[in-house]
Length: 355
Image 1 (cartoon, rainbow, N blue to C red):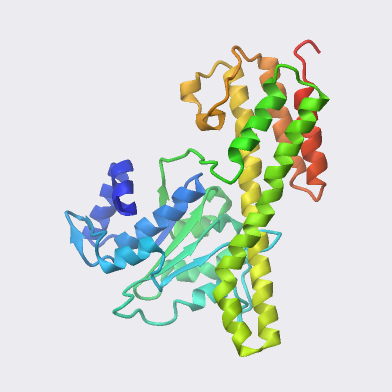
Image 2 (image 1 turned 60 degrees about the horizontal axis):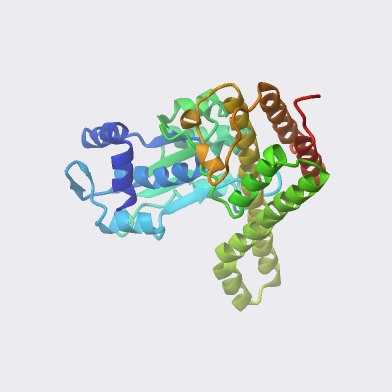
């Protein structure tokens, strides 16, 4: 099943509205896709790109078999340009006005100055985590959002649309996706949830239990950086090889710096999902303690394979949620992540309703 067909099945009303807009010449040129799931946001950017540029419609929808749609879904369409937050600060820089640096907003916008070709009839620009643009970057984007170059569609993706300036939101067609669950499918997610479960509900919760859980959590956390670096290495492998053949030390250094910046940005993205997974696990324990039925939890899959006790006291649920909130706040600062996670796990393991 093609990506477009899948979303047409999952969100029939929304897709029918968008297809009617395209058929009647009212399809927007700038979109703001709002959804809590980053995977859904990325997929839907491709779906919008298919709607925007496909020239071969079947039954009112883009034909997934056409060359344009096939290349989009395969990730090989040459005029599909993306921009993501970079670096340890994980934000999108505006870039120099005259000679913008790579991976900045202005260098991204420069890619749309050229006319689309028959081989690539529409230019697509996607800004992931658009809320990571500061006011300067958003203001630099406004004119292009309002009047994109010919045959160009711009798509902003975010989980936090309210963080964008009102002037930015007003220039986009806002698409709020109904899929509001989060999929925690990163490497080590089941291991993380098992460790959190042991901290909260193991038969004998003590310092030994806490230390074992901490080691599991730290192992998952430690892999985040390694995976981010591997991904950046793969993304920049072709560029590094090409520059290496040119024997230009200065250019090689610049490309290596971009690769390292991308690795730091990807790490921060993955770290955010990791922290969100911990908070989601604990928040749902609190919901259960308040009497919310398991079937009505927003993300029950975090408890897959785990046998939760019944009932969970409200006092225990409140304590677990409070500890998660404190951990999330603490990790916003330049602190020892290992120390913060260790303290969090020990506090969970030593909790007692009798205190």
